[in-house]
Length: 447
Image 1 (cartoon, rainbow, N blue to C red):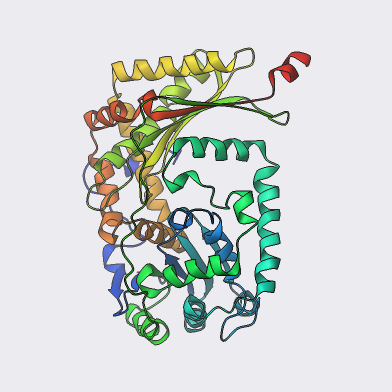
Image 2: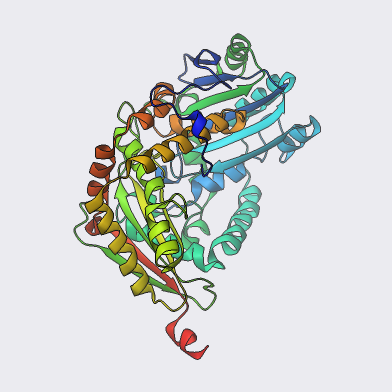
C-alpha cells in the first residue's frame, strides 16, 4: 500500500493479470450453500475455505464469546472423526489449517495439495452438522478460552483500552461486545449455549464455500454436491437484523491509565458507513480519505504536518475498513512528540483536520494514493489465500461477488469532491469516541 508504482496508474479501467474475471465461477446448491471458485493453476495447491455468515455480533445477549468458543470446539469429535483428528489428518497430508472469528463471520480453512480437496471438503462438511460435544470437551476448552483472554486481553493494557473504547463506541449494537467475550460471561458458557448457536448458524444456507487454487470449477461443484448436497438447511433462517445504535448526540471520551502503558497516544474513532451491496461509493471515498490523511508518514496530511513540518508527533495515522455487515468506524491517531501533553497532541491533530476541511484534497496527492492502492490490489491477486479471504469476508458481510469485482473501478472513480463530502459527513466529534492512553499521572510525575 505504501509503495508508489507510477507506471501502473491509468485513470480509467483497472486490470488484474493474475486472476481475470473469467477465472471466477459461482454456484449455489439447492440447500442454499453459496460457492465461489477462484482458479489459479500456477501451483498444484488449493485453499479450501468455509465461511459462516455469523460471528460474535450474532450471539444472543448474555453469552458473549460463544461464537469464538464454538470455533475452538469444532476441532473436537464428529460422527466420523475423533477429537483432534481433523488437524492431524490435514498435517499428515502435508497441509495446514486454522480458523478465525470476527463480529460478522466465522471461517475455517485448509491449504493443501490440490489432489486432497475431496478429503478436505468431506471433513469440513462432516463438522458442519455432526459435531459431538461432551461436557468434558466444553470444560477443557473453556479453560483454554479463559487463558487466551488472560494472555491476550486482561494482561495487555492496549487491548483492554481497545475493548473499553469499543464498548463506548457501540452502546446498543453488538459490535460493542468483545469477540472473545466478557470474562464473566465466557466463564459461564455451557454446552447448550454453544450448541444453540451451532444448530442455528452452522448450516449450508448460512455458509459460503470458497475454493481457490489449482482446481476445475466443474469438479469443485461435483465435490460440493457430493459432500454438502445432502445436508439440511436451517429452516426459517432470516436475514440478520441486529439492534442498531441510537443517534449519537455528544462526543464520548475515555482516559485509560495503566502503569504498563509504554507509549501515550490519542485515538479517535467516528461512526462511518460500511460497504453496502450495490452502493460502495461512500466507502470508497472513506478508503481514500484514510490514505490521504494518514496513510504515509512522509506524504499524508497528518504525517507531513505533524511529523515532518512541525515535529509535534512521533507517529500519526488514519484508518478505515469498510467490510462490515453494519456501520463501521473511521479513525485518526497521534503519538505526541516528547514534551507535549496528550491534550496538546489532540489539539494539534484537530487543527490539521480543520485545515484539511478548509483546503480540500490535493489533486497530485490523490493521484499518488490511487496509484498505490491500485498497485496493492494487483499484488493481492498473487496470493490465492488472500484473494479467497477477500471474497469470503465480503460475501459473509453482505456483499456480492460483483461488489468485490467492481470495487477497484469504484475506487478509481472517486473524485476530490467525493472525498470531501465523506470527510464532512464523518469527521464530526459528536459522533466520535476520543480515547487517551497513558500511565497514571502520578507515575509520570515521579519519573
